[in-house]
Image 1: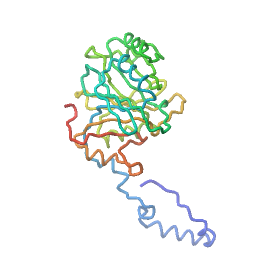
Image 2: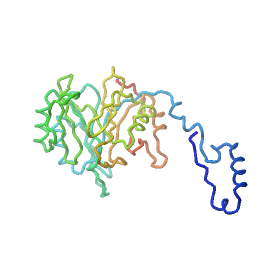
Image 3: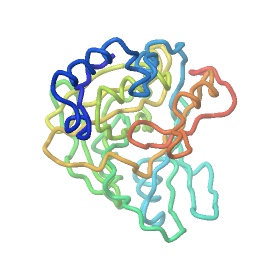
Image 4: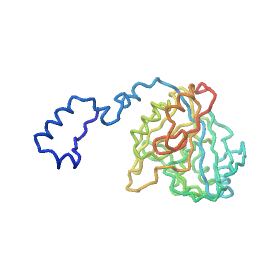
Length: 296
């Protein structure tokens, strides 16, 4: 149990002399503090007692200001294809996928039509594409309306990497490391206000595997996914260390997953306060209802 400082209420301090206060403290010392403070002592060990479950990231949903501006960047600039279009009472949705990908990976762009004011330009994550020719992809990205902020170049320990921004200032990473020779969506990144807690949440409650930790001059990140022998879309948990103050909470981002035990993962990630499945920073989790075997 965590240590707590014993504080006497002001009315007690006024009415009782010090010896009586000490006696009161002695009497309380033998009581069940979990009852006094309303805590279940087993709650602190919940994560340690969870049964292991395997899950896999399959997609990312991202709010955008204007589909007419964003869609060409991902379709024409980054080589994705439209695989689905839908309208709801409050949004227009376009789902894309890379035509040649070693695993299931979709990106859904959502333009909201309900008139509610949303900040869609402070997402602290990133979207990562693997390619055989980073320079060529960066040029296509720029010609389609993207902004190249760091042209591809060889970086120590990271290979050839470049960066850009889409029309909503989402960070795009272009990495020249494609085992298949194709260009495809390889990873999605979300911000984490507490990086270690986020890693533990996704490992123990969602069922992802920690693959790698990377530290850069601007941010630290954990790369989460499936075991190394199962190719899958990676989830990158990012915490910025460059002195900026990113908006980590309640961004218009949603992570899509499949799980071998979806009901269990829903129960572990359900927020009673918000009435939905989400992570510690309020990123929505969309978990497939039907059980699935990750990697299949």
